[in-house]
Image (cartoon, rainbow, N blue to C red; front, side):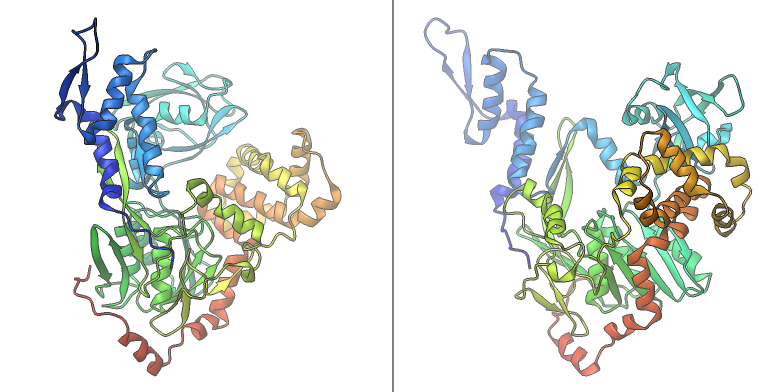
Length: 567
């Protein structure tokens, strides 16, 4: 278990008090004292101890040699204070609050397209079905040249600026000038911005006749409903085992993760509990209404799976409900609550730690500061953890028992039941050059654009992939790369050829069929997913989860009874 750092009341409330004081300091009691001889008309406001920070701001405003933007100064000070608490307590300035909330709320006002910068021009990759752009006739492959009479093509405009111009309040209008292939003149469209969903379930499809796959990229406000739709789709295809892929998922809303876990657990099974100095222990148990209690579960994680992802994986593991495959997760076991601040902005403050059902706090240590905390991923890589399970630092004193008596570990992240190291045997410098320079993506986009009409005729990913298999994709990519000054290396290309060609085909399929085309192709080089399928098909998962009844009975006696209601 990670070292328990007890926050005092002063540490917990100090950031909030600071923010309030900085904005409302004029209401704090004060006394006056003369500044000195010759200037009796000027007064220095003297505040009590609780107003010291506001006094400093006032002094700077009134006495500093140069003019100062006090608001900007405050925005710079608050993060410095929060950094002394933990890595996840953060201040969100007013200018960033809307974007920060949109990421988890799951929607925003926009025109409903996914785009990419191609040769310094915005190219539409896909159009949201039923969205504002589709309604007016914008198509994949269109180039956006102007926005409200401002030229955005060929001017090296940052992507964030383009997004800012296209997004806006729902119901407002934006004019775009479109260049379409085989059309000489720009086509003008007036688009009324609408509510655009941000999907968090990337894809759901059957890997074979019985095993389904769901990829979840974050735990946003709409993720639970998306998962229910995905599960219904898979169950309609006779799915008896589901692989939930949480790799790269950095978390999100705690309550959404709880609702998702509830779909798989029996009534009374613990999902998670939280506790903090000012937050009494709260346990959450499954209510028995889940729709997938009889379906097998395997969870995929990696070093970037964090927070809510770890709650999901930990609940499956500790209840012996499913096995976890991949690499040790990030190790974020802190719960944040968002508090609005006067004058705009918000404070996301850590208020509790969460614990898996066995009692594990998977928060990794942060005693050495924020920079060292986030460099832990680099340390893991350099230490060999990405490749070899034996390289993982395991604290033998932090051993816990699952419901069935299996040993699991605390102290920083969820340890997988089946470790899968990174396979870099077919990685070469030539492959890295193609990827890092964006050549694979650029070629796939260019190829898709030139052949869009023909490629769009295929009704299934199997048909599209069969067609691409007959094309000299590798040779075309090499020629494209040569034209972009990425020097060809014959020997390295042969080592990486299968990987390079497969990745290129996957990106072509994504441009035509979105993620429904991408994932079925890219999985051929997905070692973690291959291992998961092996574990399921050979019965290794069932062997790990086999519970000796007598042993399970003894373990269950040690689990404290709860007085908290089910969800």
